[in-house]
Length: 300
Image 1 (cartoon, rainbow, N blue to C red):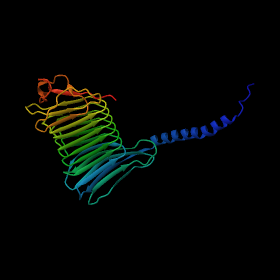
Image 2: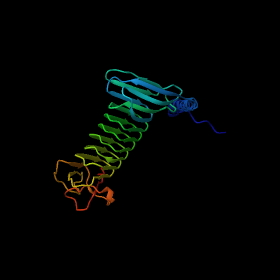
Image 3: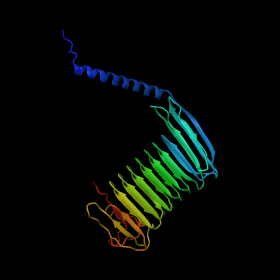
Image 4: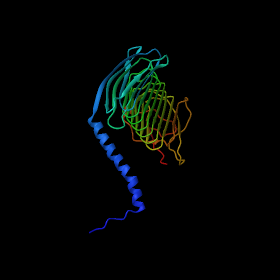
């Protein structure tokens, strides 16, 4: 017959610490199972009078689609999903504007909001989505997007735009914003049909592709990890190219002309030949015939 192991001081400490942890894991697993089984949803249909110029929409998790609506009214239409505890949708109106907030109240289980948002034309719009995709189209006022985890898609925007995406791709088309600023921590940035005169892109991890439909006045791109490709419109305009590299090596020219500036923190070098429809303007200092320029990132 096997004798039981002696109860040493080390075993007593292990049992004292391990038993509560095991019970906590069992309880959390059971709560999560109940949460997934006890799901609910409800419709959200808000029509909020807007007296000021600013509106904002914040969600803990969900899909947001923004467009232009009737003057003086903010519309938020969609569905809220929750488990265990009903989520909260709140708003208030003041002379400064209208903020709409959608928050989850549960510890575990699914919770999300799917909204179609129509903002008054020309409104200053702020969006904060902790987890989920954001789409914006046809807005004329200033737009600020803060995305925690999810893709951001924008098109046909004519007001100033500022986008910050912690994890996800940023895609855009037909942007005429006077000032366009994009920050992407982890994800690709791809913009086509660009007509913005002032463009700033900062990417920590991911490729950046900018295709201009109109001659820009200033382009500043920085990339820690990923390639940078600029496709400039055809014509006779020339640019000043400033390329910086932490290892001291660059490819490309630098010359001041007409105050147009293209700045890259990484080396600029020719990429593959573009199609005739993509031929950009030649940058002085680069070889004749080059038309697309790529800035490979500097690996730290």
